[in-house]
Image 1: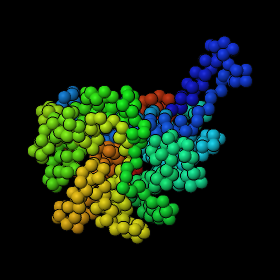
Image 2: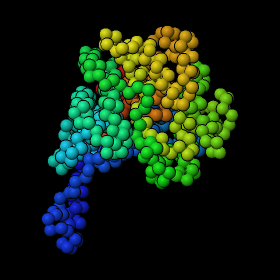
Image 3: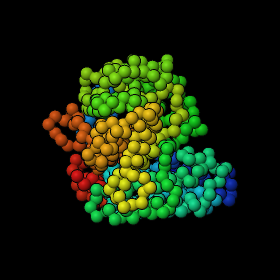
Length: 509
């Protein structure tokens, strides 16, 4: 992240020194970096965010117990035996590179008469920095994103970063209220097409995510309640009844390199040919059996295709009859006996042949409702307008909706007596919320599912078959070797990192 500016400057110098002077206007300094329009940089940054998220959503889906590996491949021991080092899972470099672009927009929007991009860029910056903290704990924040002026940025305390992100989101909302979006630039906003009201609701929903993540941290209750009150006083509300997504039919094309990135990796190419990796992620036995036990087959059939996968001749349907007996999950980490033909893959909620231009979802309405249910349960004196039960039941309904299942199925759980589905029949309300949130995050937000799994320890998922007699699970990632090489003193100042015992600050138990 720190060398990016150096490389660009060096390239400019090289070009300037190797060409004849006649190629340049006499008033142009060849050593000055040309200015990029914040609108272009913002569009590209958002697209890069979706590609970065695809990578760490995958590892989150595994380590939260939702997905596992198909047996058509040699088992990945880094993922399923937790045999990894600081050379594996390096999301750091790509994330900081992405953050540099958001910072560019924030710093240059006013000068380019595009101030309406500042607020959205700050929202995205806050979201991505939270991801960093949830992976690594202490990271460079106040000293980061300064290019050559800070080549070895110090690390900030993760708790302080979390508080700073709330402030950053408050700034973002103020910026958006002060700078109405110019309709001519709607197309540069790949998320809400210039709708700043929705951007403000997304900002508040991110605040809610950040606050609830800290709800088990001692001494934080008063702060969390105060900040929830500020959100309610601000008045924009939260994302409701729809997802926050990047791109869509106006952006993704049936052209190589321009498909929805998830579709491109695990679905089909631009010509409709099935990707080899379509057989890689498998839905876990734990998830499938749990859904069957609760009679939750409507969602099951949207989370997964039946054994053998999608019928390419009739997109969106399974090759086998869609009855419960034909849905077989794969034990987490198993390395043989569960081939693609007899297990369930990612389902139509994610992949349908020909639907290459769906938005890439970065937050679901269901997640927001379950977070509100937890907020109301923990902080009953905060003036949220609905009861915890109403938020909980709406969360299940929104989960059915986003998966493409009939929402009448959600209504049927009211009064059903099924624990962790029926609010009144659930003795521990926080447990019910956590389990339903975990189900709702399936296929859409694997990284959030892993973060919530670490925070709540729910649901109690089976250990990987690759670890016999061991209970260890990854609680974070190593700082990458690339950062150790370029900023070693500050990395070493964080102490010895053990990915199985060094917890993120909100992971208290």
